[in-house]
Image 1 (cartoon, helix red, strand yellow):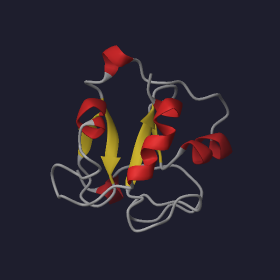
Image 2: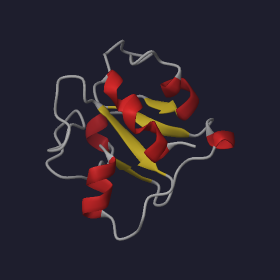
Image 3: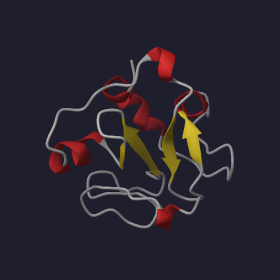
Length: 108
C-alpha cells in the first residue's frame, strides 16, 4: 500500500509520516491507535488531534497490523515492528531506535 493513500493524522505530517514533533530522517513510522483505528505519527499528534484518550494495544493483539512504514507504506504487525531491530523488514529503511522510549504509551 502506498503511504500517500494512507490517512495519517497529525501536526505537520510529511509524505513519510514525520510530524512537527518528531522529524528526523529516521522518524518514518506511524502508529494506528487502538482507540480510534487511526494512524498518527506519534502520541503528541494523537493528543493534539483526537478528542479522546489513547488506548494501548494489549499483548494478545500483537498480530494486528498497526505500524506503517512511512518510506515504503508497508503495514507491519505490532510483533513484527517490536522485533524489527528498528528497520523495516520490507524496504530496510531505518526507524528511530529511540521510539522504544515510548512503547509503554502504545503497547502493553
